[in-house]
Image (tube, rainbow, N blue to C red):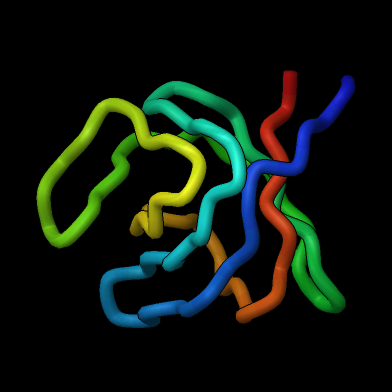
Length: 83
């Protein structure tokens, strides 16, 4: 399946299991993403997107968002949208 680079991980918050992601393309709830890095590689569907603790249904390029993730991620990991 083709993948489109949509952003990079900027931070990870372990307790809530949330990745901070700087977007270079749009994402919306329901999209399937793949996060890949030196020791990271998994796919998941986005179930929530937040900016400053406000829930959104979609985010655009240039936004810094928080997305709940199912596994640990690291700053610099690449985020791809699976199409």
